Image (cartoon, rainbow, N blue to C red):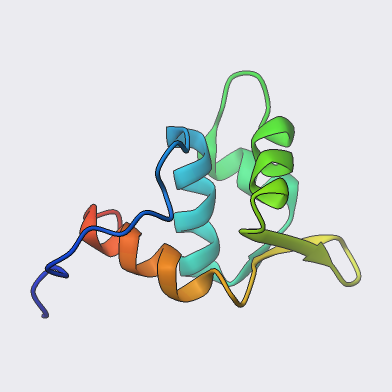
Length: 89
């Protein structure tokens, strides 16, 4: 077990709880479809708009057969640091 990072990250500033849950799920599982994320997050109105916003922020990519969503490689470090600081992973 390691202590929490000393400094808070800024990667998750201005993100909704649903968006943070999507990022946590992608960090934990690697790649998931939108349907799988919907099941995990269980957002009332759907998570399509949340995922679209994460794409616009360059945090999530979608590709490959089946349309799996993944955390963008340039976002892995900042996102995992901030999630860890917030005790979400």
